[in-house]
Image (cartoon, rainbow, N blue to C red):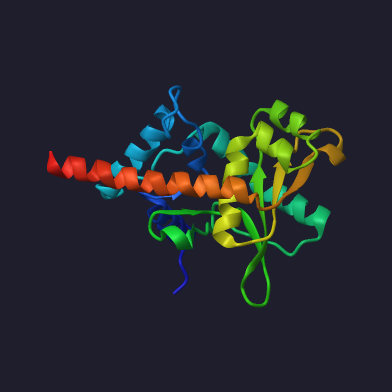
Length: 228
């Protein structure tokens, strides 16, 4: 039996519940001011995942920047269409109506991520992905037009870079395009910016070690509450 859009989205939220996800794992990257592995934002994130592991999902979790996400979601499919038109790639759109959650094979049940769009070969291996960003603030896209390569993405948008590197590692895909789109640009040539991002092993290894540490701390927190 085919699942409805609502059933697919409900399953996606359930799959993400209590897991460290690619879109949020950038929070684990920074140390605190005295050099400890995690800063305050990271500890809040870890504690939230511990809480989720101890509770049933009573409602869909509120995602950060809801207004911006709603705006981005509205334009994500037109962005996908323009991306395919410009590149000619045969991509599968996953989007908000048919989300796909990929588990991290090294951290099953603890971490994973959701690409916006993928290309697969005959062996059903992911050979290309794209991460689409449709910023509500037009200045964000305007600045991205001048970006040249993945190092500009890393320097200026660490959240997206971390998300893409996490997804590349999880999927084993060789490349993921960073796509920024803004329908409001008068010049059609400036409406979309596409930057290929390739695996950055040093970054991936560092992020993976931090996720492993975060998983350990999550379970320590749970044990502390169970012993209270």
